[in-house]
Image (cartoon, rainbow, N blue to C red):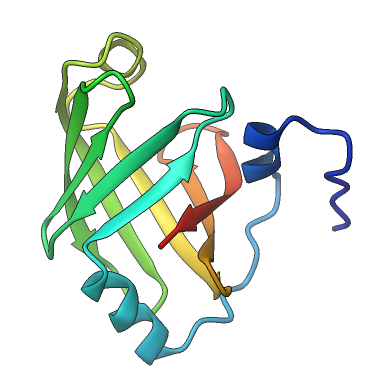
Length: 134
């Protein structure tokens, strides 16, 4: 799979639709280090930065306008975890997800400033690669 990112707006370079789930190249140490960070961020396709606060059992998105989404987090194996939607006061997110919706994440690779990630919305064809910055 060859991905060409030149010419895309900055936010779009961080999210790519895929059909095939890539293999993880992450070590157990990198996986554990990921969960020690507690504060991460990602850039939405609009270019807005979203802050992510994680614990061993929670994932919280804090949006540019001060709204939030709360999800529970479960570690699955050496490279994967899932989050389950609980609630949101963000106008778009509270209509995009309903309580109980699950998203499976795979940490693909640790880069200098970010983790390459794969996400799959369980029960849908939605699969994307994105960057989660630390």
